[in-house]
Image (cartoon, rainbow, N blue to C red; front, side, top):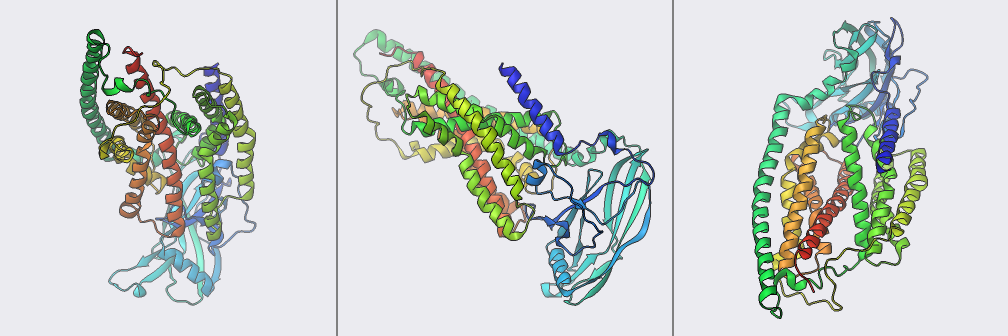
Length: 592
């Protein structure tokens, strides 16, 4: 039953991703000489601010009447794509030489718009037969000028398209600008511009099935692969040494504890107990705020399942370069379909902890991650609307997302909660819990929650920080990331290290006769998310050139949601492993 459910979910997600963008091996990509080939202008924006993009015709370019908008799928809209018919006409195998689009007199307002765009390194993006192409609007002449007021600003008016074909298919397209055809827009005055383009066709031997390969080759170049593998080897060596060291110590200490406790039972039954055995009557005492803990575990389990499914889709090749919006579509669909897992996990665990108000627990589970994400989205979408950016979601898209949440996510969450409530499973505790809790002895400062979280998060973060740069450069930049196998290995290392360090810290906490390990294990496991957010500060100020209120708010706003998701997911991993460990050690000794 479970296997069938997984296969059904995978089939739905694959169908959703396919509808986002027709893959480039579709049969309708064959053309005859003179056939029109679709060319869509997508967006423009500052090169260093990937979230701050605008519609192509927000700038006063020439237009061909009528301008038609391409119907876009959910993932494309979430990605900020707004495709419209481009002013250039590139029919199959038809060459153009300095073809004039239009002659236009730029007003002073137009000149100011273009000059502001050129000064911010604006680029444009288009799609020709589903192949992406980019170019810059102009250039700034800073040579020999130290004062910015002396800079010269030039607008490109002539674009060259170099198109490769193989028989009746388009294989590649490159765009370049004619440096001899620039318009000076430095001064605030009207300018006459003649926008032109040239199209040249060249036959190539590259098969149609491999025309997307060149976009993924940049991340697979030898020097990039060497860095990635160095990252993995560095992580593995660090992890093996440290975890091996801790494992050896932990196993020796546990073995000595078992021998000592067994000897104590044989020689002196009334001897006072010490160490972690001393608190056997309190270690399984249910924690405070158990409804919140159960909701966090349910949400973390859902996010872990979501991450695994995303990796599976990536490894089978669904997220090929520039499959517009496929990742966003997969995230929305899988999150909706896995909400039942969150409901079942949270409610069943809450009932095991003898909770009674399971409906409130279910509501808390549904809002624990979606609530902060929704509030962040409302703020950032308002900012995008104020900037008139393409990141602002249309009202229709918001309605679709609300309907998905209402008609799919919520019902599955409720069904999962009902199934969890009716599971009738009891909490498996090897030891009886005493009526009154023991007092926790005074502890050193480094045994507090915050120092323990700092120690717990550092080791997992150190195993992934090299790979984080490439991920950030892809998500918040223009670098292409396609080495999903390496990323999956890094993810597995992250899970293993998080589990092991949480178990070690849980043992040291119990050895200090501190029995409040439930929340501590969750917080220590999830603390890596806080380290990742700290890395966001470093990346923004030291490794990127992002600027402006909109880009800054988008970067830190959505990264806060992502790091919060990592906190819940890794916290769940840490707690589950710690629970297994605590059950194991107390099952191995004789407890009254």
